[in-house]
Image (cartoon, rainbow, N blue to C red):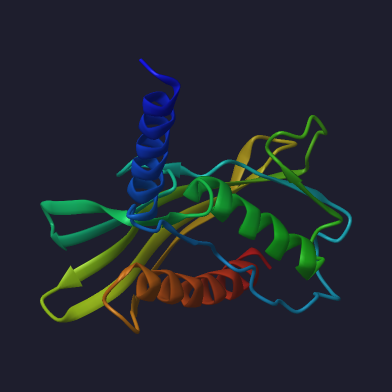
Length: 195
């Protein structure tokens, strides 16, 4: 094969690669914002530590994938949109930051910390999805929190928080916006409940 033919073949393959890459759909990334919280000045936990466990899911596996449903048995995953990180990691990060910013506890630890804690906060995700029913579109979040006295291993209290918020648009962007609104309410309710 001559040098000129080889150069032409390389140029054709390069052009095909560039054209093929430029037609790929854009992958939109969405995240959860940490809500603003007020600092607590009087509380019974101010000299205590709390460890926030990695949230567990009893439904779909938690990942970067954004789940939607058109019916109870008709589910899917957005192909061109996803969360910026594993949803369990995003939830854990928000809970840690909200508790830390509230100054409710002396120190807030992740479950990767080797420090001993006075309290442990466990969470179970029952639902976290974009629910579309006809023209109605909602972000749905349902999480149960369990506060445990780590010194004694006993249950302090447990509560399930469930929210359904209408989305501004019937797409992944609208779902992410409504989920962020839910996180503001969830953070506020969680702090009130812990106190």
